[in-house]
Amino acid sequence: MNNAGCEFPKAALEISPRGLDAVLRTNLYGTIYMSQAVSRVMAQSGGGTIINIVVSLLDRGIPGVAHTVAVRAGVLGYMRTVAQEWGPYNIRINAVGPGVIERLNSCAL
Image (tube, rainbow, N blue to C red; front, side, top):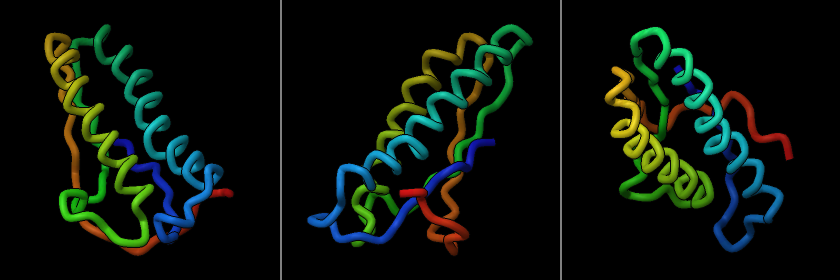
């Protein structure tokens, strides 16, 4: 299960390159790197399931965290693509969208 993620509230006009990079590195790159590492093992052992936790309100947008919504949309696109690529290896990709939950920590900026 992959549930690493970070965000910070910021108006879209005020998001800095450094802030966007922090969200990209954690939420998108982290998902991709974790999925690649686990899928290599799963492919050799007969398959398995990768579950990613994502925010479920992406289709409506979430004011104040446009950067997070954009990156999570990238995560969903990635998941849809690798689900097709890795299906022949008996690897399933699932997303769980629990909705907005209380933030325990924020990105290290």
